[in-house]
Image 1: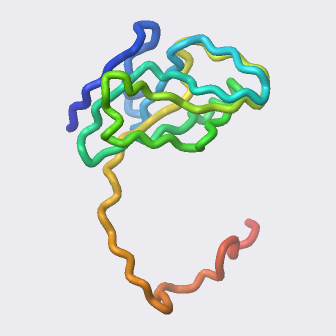
Image 2: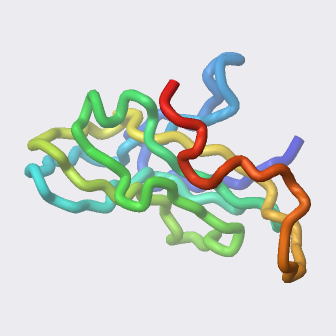
Amino acid sequence: METIKIKYFTDKIDRLAYIDGKSDWIDLRSAEDIDLKKGEFRLVPLGVAMELPKGYEAHIVPRSSTFKNFGIIQTNHQGVVDCSYCGDNDQWFMPVYAMRDTHISCNDRICQFRIVQNQPKIVFEEVNSLEGADRGGFGSTGKQ
């Protein structure tokens, strides 16, 4: 088990915790009240910074209910926090775009994260053809 140092930027959000055996993703919360107009972009502060272990990164994605509840989409579709983003002021944010007028309250769960090991170092070997079975190209499996 890894130990990760975490700094909270506010006492207004719940502390991070696993949802009892239901997922290995951990919810993140808005660290402030935010009003967004349709078409507006905003970095939503998540109220935490962490020192991830060397060789690990965090992947931040919306919760399944984020769009339904708030009408926002994450503009980069997935945030990646690498282990070098670990300073005292390196608060995590979720970049969002509002698809409707909306309000996010401080402590609302708006996204989730998991920590994964970095991709191993790889070497690319250029070839004229590949040995795997040909599936027919992109979108070749048709409609189900």
